Length: 239
Image 1 (tube, rainbow, N blue to C red):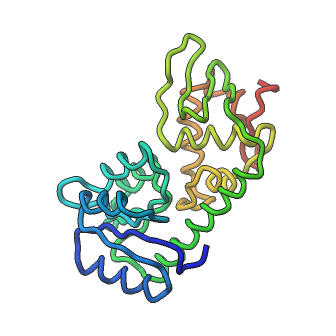
Image 2 (image 1 turned 90 degrees about the vertical axis):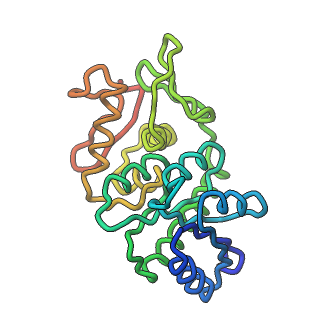
């Protein structure tokens, strides 16, 4: 996808930020539209397609996290969140809810451009992979069945196991790579969470939380196993 055909929507309540990002990205060939709040964002989405949204978290009224939650109900357009410096909790919550990346304010314009290009590139790679790879509809994780199309996991008694967006993306990544050892970088890439450093321990924490939900004994996992020095593997035949 070339820049001229890429439509970006910038949603921020600060006019100077909107104008700065529109001017900078516009000069680099992107087609940039702006919105000052959630209502204007939805109006733009209703009348035109958008390839990527840059969304501020701290907006008055309906904030960015609420907007992201409503978007992810029926729209998978990539979203880069803008967060105030040091707002780690907002950043983590946003990623758990399905944001593709985040960037702290004040915005470094060159870094923003790099992250926009990286997110769009991953989107294209994911689309290519989806077209070329075998389709996986369901996967068994111990006593639970993951339905990828319905984005839910159910127990043998039919009850649904609540999952965050990131937990679902992690399970989906493992399901699509059954029997293959994935390192942290590969897991983050396939779970659409490249904002985290592959050497960061956050992926280990997330898998630990996931194990507490699906493993009979999280201290001795058999469903998602650790391969020391390499990463993690999901292989139901060895469970």
